[in-house]
View (cartoon, rainbow, N blue to C red):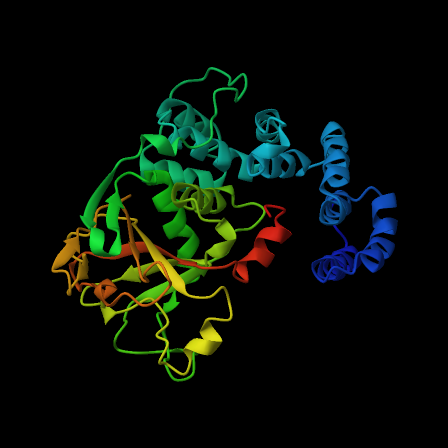
Length: 376
């Protein structure tokens, strides 16, 4: 049954109340819709309860799963995957969502299999669901075609990412500069690029005087800022892998950025830290403190150019798909590291896609987004 316009408006209002932590008023407006067994209202009731008491909220959500309420199994799988400390297996819920034809569950399952290297199973999942336009596009782009008609019995062999198998190559210990190959999968790289396509805008820099973002010839190219949603398991999983690999709370990161550089575009030598002598730094530092670490991941092989260069170290890191690059912007006391001066070299041929994440000393405003998703 399609949602009426009045119900849609009511749910939008209720969601705003929940985000504003006006729980009593939200519950008052929500209950009539819950009494009508409107599925979207039932899921919002779970959100409300999860905000108030995770234990009560999960119990209610599990009841919705038993009732086969659309979206409930995926929501349960999502929360349990990102909260392994709960001790409840996420996989049966993900499989139930998959069997219900939940698009987000199909994407999530394929991605999880691919990060384990189980290409055949991922191909089977995607091929069987090529009637979904998004799935079909991913399948064709990656060449993940399967002729296996055997039914998937369960997802019991799905595992979380094993980051212990990754190895790193040190480039410049002066700023703890190193890279890690194959940090992402081809699927994840394509996913990030696709998510960014409709959001790309002219790149900007932080003005040292005002702390505001401005257009500058120092930085050309385009950028899209991505915030994970309740249906985007892939992006949040990438951010969780970064947080786990560096043992830094995910909420200490800024929102993820996807950068695109075409021929001739570049990011001239610059620092990522906020300089203490800049007037605008005081304002910028209010949201989580200093940017002490930068994480970059190349999302494609650049045909020519596009390397990340550190002129004061005479070091460069080649732009290689799935390669993570990391370096410190500050010393152990969070003072500026002048040797961290770096630049994105001009693209000479082809194009360059890059994921970037700045990590700060303390939690940032990104924490609110994570709390809305029940990840924190």
